[in-house]
Each structure stands twice: as structure tokens, then as C-alpha cells.
Image (cartoon, rainbow, N blue to C red; front, side, top):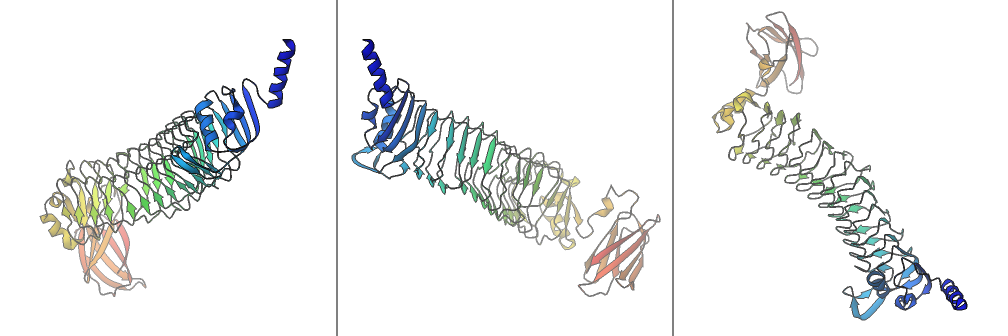
Length: 497
């Protein structure tokens, strides 16, 4: 009996077989099951040689005790058969076929170094805890590693050209990822609540729909964006993203609800972004700093709704023709710039904007048409509406508009400047050949000079706040205004004619 036991042990060593570990060399396609034999309960499997989809199916479905799978020295052979495997009748060489290792119990997996592509769902729902993609892989399919609930870190190298949708969706323990492919696909990390450290390639061109939706742990992205053109619908919706500087990007599109409900505090966009979608910043209630992003002709519905932390001036751009429904509802900006091209404002667009003190439309060309209850909840008589002098009567006669405190944008209502203190503040503009000079305190005298010092006009103001002087000077010239107030204050103003 002792002799027999020694003989069995010797055979086990000779074949690389033990009760827990199994190492098989020179495997040929379709033979793995016979090579493993009765050792299906092995916890570790290392294979060299060539495998096909039949062998991978055997590993995934029969070797359920595996904790380690090392295929680094194996290759994937092509397969063609009458009985489809994973709904595939043919499989290409070098590809980890779709769903082939889905649900695998192994926590440590080394993929073949010769691998060129990973199919849809190839390792979905598996127990792997970390992932490194071989450098030869060019394509990764949709959901390839989705719902790997034990996965904590992953690396997608820059050599990967395409990655399918939802590649890591539902990997709720994934905390760190280096993703250097040129595009982040839609729903790539959706629901990865533990994700904190994200490295993207500097050359990334697109962040897809819902890519980081629900990633509450992501507060920032590590990359220097120089090529980003598209941020997809809901890309960061409900995420923990706090700050992004995209000023050096050729960004052209921010999708619908892109940052809705996110923790965004600061966003610096390029100066010109022609398309910002509906609800892009909807209820981004921590947002305090927003720059760039002009170039669009429309502010879409609910784009800036619920910006309750934003306290500065908002200027969506000089080309805005239409402002959509609820576009700024509940936002807390103090001032708002009305585009010169504006001709329509939708229902309740500014409802609940109780912090606003001023709407400034110095170049507005017409009285825009309005939807219903555009300024519901706003104390309009306390809010300044600054428009060109020749439109004041039209605004004053228009429903909803007429409730504002309407002033001439040329004079800028400086007489009401409560912060002026002991200063003489001047403002001037031309109406035909008449120069209108206004001040914050009663004026005594106003004088006008050209840049050589030649006096062009003067007037005794007699305590008026506004003075009109006839100044004969061609367009394209600079004039200097000097004024003295009744109390002795003096001030000066430079005006380009």
C-alpha cells in the first residue's frame, strides 16, 4: 500500500496535477475537458497551448471552484461548429468570445497575452477583483466586464481603439480605473458608486451617454483634456463630479441632463460651445462658478433650473434667440444678460429667481414674446430692466415686462447706485448728435473735449442728473467728458463715438 501511495504522488507531480492546483501544457483546441479529467474541483488552473470556445465554456460552467485562472501563455483558436456556442457558430482566432467566461468564479484572471479582442459580456458577472488588458487588444465589446461586483481596479491601455457600451456598468466596488481609450462609451461606469480615482487619456474625444451617471464617489477626472468634443446625455447625472476645466477643448456638445443632479461646483467651458442640451445643469445645486459656453442660439428647457448656489451674473451668450421653459427657474443669479437677438422666453423661464436684481439688455432689438408666468415669484418692481432708450416705451407697454423698473441702458441707472458713496459716477451715450451724460448726484457743469484737449461743448447742468449736449464729432473718435457736481465732486469719462 505504501508503494502504491508513493506511485500515485509521483504521477501527480509528473503531470502537474494536485488536488488544488492544475497546470497543463501544450493543450490543443477542444481537449481541455479531457486533460482536466476528474480534477474539475481544482482551485487554480494554468494553461499553455491553444484553446477554443469549447474549452472556455468548460472552464466557466464546470470548474466552479477556481479562484485563479492563468491563460497568459495560451492562445485562442478559431472555432466553427454545427452546435452554436454562446449563440455563435463561428469564433475568430485571438478573440475572447462573447459571454465565454461570464459568471466565472475565479477572482484572479490573467488573459492570453496574444489576445486581440474581448467580446460582448465576455467576463460579465464574473468574480475577478482586478483587470489588466493585454497590450495587443484593440477592441472590447459591450458589457465585457459588467456587473463584476468584486472588481476593484481596472486598466484599459491606450492601445485599445474601441470599447463597447456599459463595459463596467454595475461594478459597484470598482474604485480605481485607468481608461486610456479614445472614447468613453455610453454607460461605461454607470452605477459604479465606489469609483473615486479615474484617469482618462488626454486625447479622449467623447464621454458617452450616462458614462459616469450615478458615480457618486467621482469628484474629479485626472486628465488634461485637449481633444474632447462631446459630453453625452446624462454623462455625469447624479455623479459626485465637483470640478472640470475644459477651456482647452474643442468642445461642441453638452448633452441633455449631462450634469443634472450632480455635485458640480465649478465648470470652465471653452468660450464657444454651440450646443448645450435640455436640463444640462438641472438641479446642480452646488454650482457656484460657470464660465464660457457661449455660441448656442437657444437656452433649452430647464437647462439651468435649480442653480440655487450660483450668486453671480449669468450670460448665456449674445446669439441667444430663444430661452426655453423653466430654463433658469429657481436659479439664484444676481444679474442676467439678455441677448440682442432674443425674441422669445418660455413658460416660467425665470420663475422663483428671487435673488435677481437686474436684467441687462443693452443691445436687445425687440421686445421678446413671452410664455406664461415667466417671472412668477419675482418681485419685479424691485428689479431693474435695462434696455435701449428707444425701446423703453415698448417694454413699458408690454404685459409682464411692464412690471419691471425699466431704465435706459445707456444711462445704466447710475443715479440709483447706492454704493457710490462720495464719488461722482458718470455714464454717457449718443442719441444722434446729442450726447446724454448722466450722474449719480446733481451736476453743476459738464464739459466735452476731443483727445487734443479742444473743447467741443459745455453746459450748466443746474442740478440735473442728466444733461444733453450737442457734440459735432464724426463716428470713430474718442471724446472726453469732464463734470463737476453741485457738492464739489468731480469726475471724468471717456466715450468712443
